Length: 366
Image 1: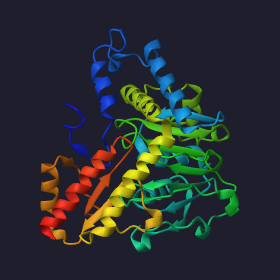
Image 2: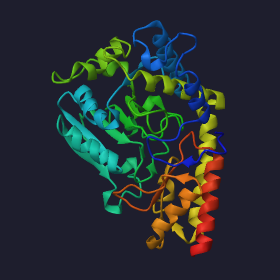
Image 3: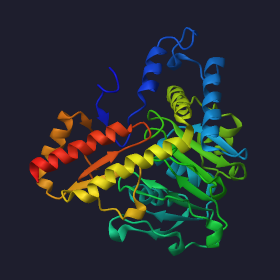
């Protein structure tokens, strides 16, 4: 089946993968590069898989220009587990400030309260998470162990275009960034980050792998109750092989990293992401039939929630989308409406097909 024949999958995660990656994985399923084994059958400590993991780490470091004083960890548990693993490693049992910009950062604050004194430094809950709290308005406490930010909210479709400079805000704490749903879609300013984490299933690969990129000086601070497999220093000291990592997910992620490099790297994929987002938002804003409720300056390039002004047409819209081979456009149950996730692997042609269907549906039902 060619890319032209495959439906376009707008799932928020697990999400679409590049066709070239799926084809290579299929070709190597029974025998990885003459080894006589599929990747799922390999020992995680064997030379074959170690080569896969080392290449994946090296390619990721190149793509995101990760400085030498940051460690890249391949972990498990997803973003939700990191909401606990981060305070277990970094809070030192003290205070943590969280910026609540949507559903995921709200969950982060709730989970961190199990291990630390958590305060909400800013929140956009009052406007339904449709704008972003400006860093200048954040109420940051002195002496906090870290400040937590979700830089792209998958459900509500808000995204920080630039990471805040905490030092300029008078805060000397490290910034922890949950970048699960836009990792590798744009560059990261590492001078402003202490730790970044991302579940892989939205923009990198299959569920099961979680990336943690952490500055060296933040290792070795874990609380005594932190499980050994979740202690960042233990994981770093063992090159992510302290316990059996999600080997196949690392392999697929590595293929995605190579695909990204072949596209021209993060700068090239960002340009494509800008074009896709502009195409979709431009049509939604001018249609009169649909609406996106997020303030323009805070709109996500990756996750685009939208609503039919006549929501009695929702089921007909989704049925028609399926007939047009446009999949998983239903919005999150907590928000309703529709949502198009247009991650790195979604081609511009897929967004154009969605816009064509939006126009056609509006013409027939408007």
